[in-house]
Length: 481
Image 1 (tube, rainbow, N blue to C red):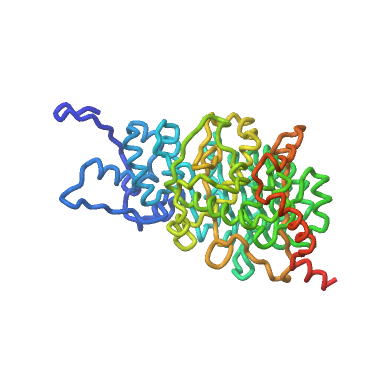
Image 2 (cartoon, rainbow, N blue to C red):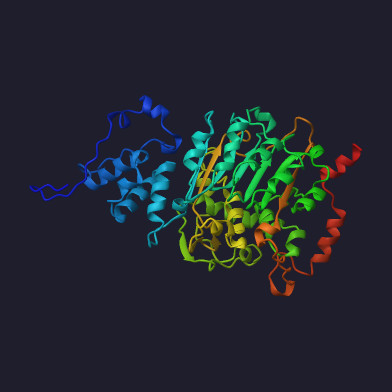
């Protein structure tokens, strides 16, 4: 609209009163989680008199970003959108606001992009009873972003609700983690029947690359047959009863999977899981104790630093993540805040729980050339890069529902109700998905051509130590036979 007297051009909206009433209104109580800010709105005041009108308008827009639709932002110039994002970035934003601004700003040729604009993370301590309340906002039919969902203690979803997860076209990482026994929290029933039900859906999990199911007396080795029907699944990580997984290697070979060596102690790290897909036989067998601590710290700290700069490079020209993992020198200094994990963490909130799935999903995409995204016609022409790392080819939305242990989030919840060694972790990889069906497996890289984690001179010593060393649980288990 145009005001002839003042010469101003403006646009007018009509907003119902109940949508902007106080926080005690029934509307605010029933509003979707994705439109609620995790923390209270910030009330800014001018130091000397009233603030500029633009600043006040940005404040109002940011406080009510959950009520804004994408069409409402079309008339705003990018300079103002960036100011809105900076305001929300410093004070937290809701998932709906992240979706709007991520879609609007990532496509712009601007060098101000940060990791917070490319990755959304939220932890809900006490989830509600309806799973669709969380999956509906996280679903993107056109795959504007990829979803990483974690379901753990405090979730009372039914099996019928869990079946609907297979209908999410953009679900890339799914973790179903039974909480530690000491927590005594409710948790959905996870079984082979649920996985079989997923396979009976039409086109189930088209973009799911990573599936983790942890618990005691949940899935069995027969589940390998059903998860093989998910076209993009490359990593199946299970922690279950030993009694239900008596011949996992035999079943895995029959179904086209490869069982990784069971980790213990310092070997159980993010680096260990990433190196499962490396064409370096030495890195699969050697103990990566010294390097794993450094690399895990780098990857987790980068995920924690939401203001880490993100740039875009032409497709398939991003730095190779495996080169960084096997480079013992690490000459490049980090461009992100190494203290970010401690600075951003607020109790269980702010913990970078997504790091494990985030980097595995990125590595699998780089090794497979994102064939699953290309098959759907949604593979982007550019790749996002932060520091020396290539990020997932699509923005990632990560949601953690519930608590897995005392204190909130634990990477190793304990299941001791049936004994100390009643459960075991099994990690399966599927090379046919990573490198393509019918394609030859990459040859191991010669030691002379790569800077490996352990030198050739120390390899015989490590080999001798490996023969002598036994896992503590295996030794104690032998006493019970």
